[in-house]
Length: 252
Ligand SMILES: NC(=O)c1ccc[n+]([C@@H]2O[C@H](COP(=O)([O-])OP(=O)(O)OC[C@H]3O[C@@H](n4cnc5c(N)ncnc54)[C@H](OP(=O)(O)O)[C@@H]3O)[C@@H](O)[C@H]2O)c1
Image (cartoon, rainbow, N blue to C red; front, side, top):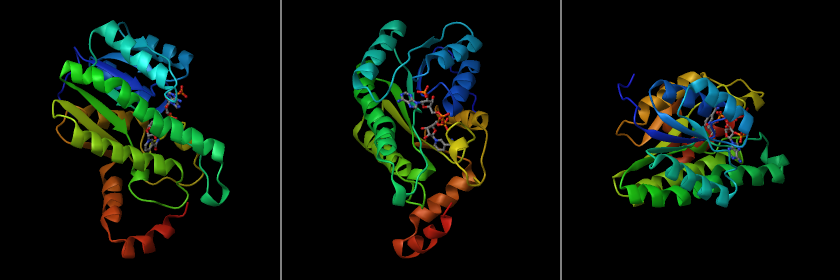
């Protein structure tokens, strides 16, 4: 485990009302961080915050609404005087096949998972730039590494997140740290929707521990569990002539 202490740090977790984001809030609070917690479900955020002790605050929002994200970033900054880390965990997920696309759910996934991330980028970059320091961490997924059967359109939004994080790293000065978080399967409300067997699935607490360890490290990507993520990295690195013969066998 990393020895980094989060005391004296203000961390904004977006998507903190359940799953990995809520577990990360518990983990970072235990490691001393002061938290600003966002998601749509106010009651879930209140219950979580009450269990964390004093000093933490909730800032309910819908990431699909640009003005709410911008106003919340300003409110957190003026409340604490700074924001040290911004961690974008929010996502919507509806499993479907491309042969039976649900366009309303598709639009929602794009608006929350991808457009929501752009709203956060637009809202926090001026703050981090003015501070001259800070971190922006975006949660992608191994689902975004390569196109697999049964994963769309969620996977397309996660491929977009990976690309966005890579571009942020390329464009921003090194004084602003950019992290890409790439989980494999993690037990949560999101994966409870899957009816197939999820290989090497881990708990949200274990995922949160890996993220809390990884955020202060130098590397760009925090990925876990490593055996699973490395297999998918290998698949992604293969030429299409080989990989496209393998991917149809991942049919869930
Ligand atoms: N679980 C996995 O196996 C897995 C694998 C790879 C990547 N991930 C990624 O990990 C992150 C966390 O997922 P999870 O598994 O912990 O799922 P989860 O329990 O469903 O958490 C999703 C979070 O996003 C929030 N959210 C959804 N729509 C929102 C909106 N419009 N505005 C603000 N917040 C919104 C939810 O809160 P409200 O409903 O209260 O708004 C909730 O806090 C996601 O980015 C997901 O894609 C998960």
